[in-house]
Amino acid sequence: MTTTVTTRPAISVSGLRKTFGTNVVLDNIDLSVTEGTVFALLGPNGAGKTTMVRILATLLPPDAGSIRVAGHDLIRDPDGVRGAIGLTGQFAATDRLITVQENMRLMADLNRLGRTEGKRRVDRLIERFDLGESARKPVSLLSGGQQRRLDLAMTLVGNPQLIFLDEPTTGLDPRSRHAMWQIVRELVADGVSVFLTTQYLDEADELAARIAVLDHGRIVAEGTPDELKRRIPGGHLLLRFSDPNSWRTAAAILTTAQRDDTALTLQVPSDGDVASLRAVLATLDSVHVEPDHLAIHTPDLDDVFFAFTGAPATPATPASEES
Image (cartoon, rainbow, N blue to C red; front, side, top):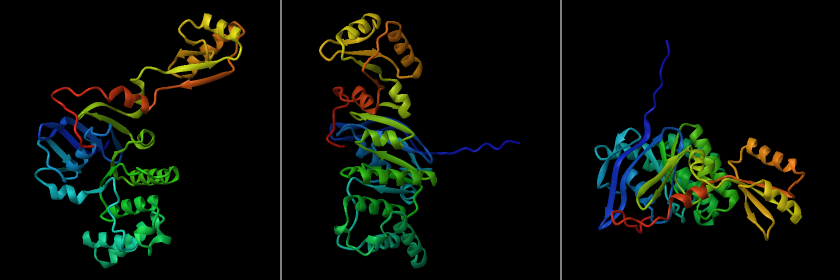
């Protein structure tokens, strides 16, 4: 007998709408976030990302729509939602005048954990987030990366099922960003669901199982990172030559290539797979020509972002100042 395991969505949204005055900030949004995964929401400034996070975290009421978060109806059971989620915003929500340990214990008290359980959980999170040497330091003396780690650790004191990370690595150096990425991966491995907004497209590519692109309050594209990249044309092989005669011979046989007479390059349309690369090299070998340099370009999330965002808003969906 086979047992079928079903999982409910961590977030389910249908027909979400939010306006501020005459500005339509979110316009008929539908999305679903699978439990135990990272879902990334991308979009330019003013697209409505932070507004969506604030609504899903019960900080802002929607104007319309059906929304369930962590199994709770957002309108009928906001306390149930709040008890199941954690939120790390764009700016660290810490008290800079008290120590790391005191900030953590304050969160334990707010979550009514009790002295013994609170101390156990605080000590474990301080160790997990590599904050032991800074535990008795005021937060004001911590680096930016340490403050962001503390902010996330404080979010985890309540043991949330779902975490909203609103641009969590903004302003961090590359080493600190990668440290945060590893923490997010570990959280997901533990079964936590993560809703991520970010301006860093490589961050979404590294972490997200699924991505939605928001522009002018509407979802304009959604899928896995690879699915979104495959929707964008422009993959190519770039062949560079130092000898003009070799370049002209190659250009004559590679009839689909885009030529650059000054740089002596040929840009050959390609999806970047091994078969197409071999075919181009075999064609060049047949006329005894070899490029001095070859580079493969496949569409990335930057290409996706530029392809799907930036179109003028229609009168029904004017741009908002909300981010």
